[in-house]
Image (cartoon, rainbow, N blue to C red; front, side):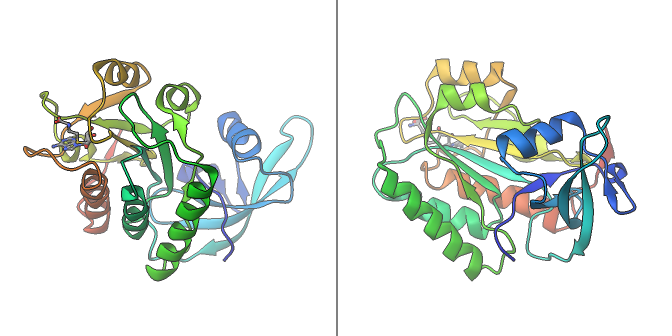
Length: 253
Ligand code: SAH
């Protein structure tokens, strides 16, 4: 299947062949993902079900809705959209991160430039990361290739990222609950997850404060300091393990 954008919908939004999109989802599909009427996308209920859907235009009262074309059978995708927000590490470290988190099921990778980021990549880097993601998705037999966003200053990313999600910022040397404790149990329907990882020098106090102000919860990944390139692998492995062992014992929220 070609690379299609994905959106999470609540199970009750799917009624027969119709998907009743809410205004936020319509905004996301049309303005953020820039889809047009007639474009296809994948609707997921976050519980392991997904559908190939098409955007259609209807009466003026509800001008845009979506119709299910067919259910998709996917055994290799995480049932929850997971975004890695990562301050670019030095050198070529990010290449390996892109490869490994793609294998682990990440949906979106948002490279950010933070106060202590040393790498300021040129446009050919983004192309390279997208190629690596494509290869890793194929190699790991995924149906979807993760989206890699353009590198953006952290502050700008925080201001423009309005997608409702469970947001976590991984921090060191301060007391914070473990990511696993925060993820478990998962709410129904599972919200998209965003996990932010800092550069080699860590986040500044100001960056952590700004992230908290935009809905991020500070979390720990354990008692040891991990390298910047190790931390995302640990975080993604926790998300995948929770969902894939059926150990996500869900609760109504
Ligand atoms: N130089 C910093 C460590 C930076 S590690 C220090 O000495 O404290 C790079 C990034 O990996 C951190 O910003 C954080 O996002 C993540 N990280 C590494 N180990 C972690 C841990 N045990 N818990 C949470 N995040 C961690």
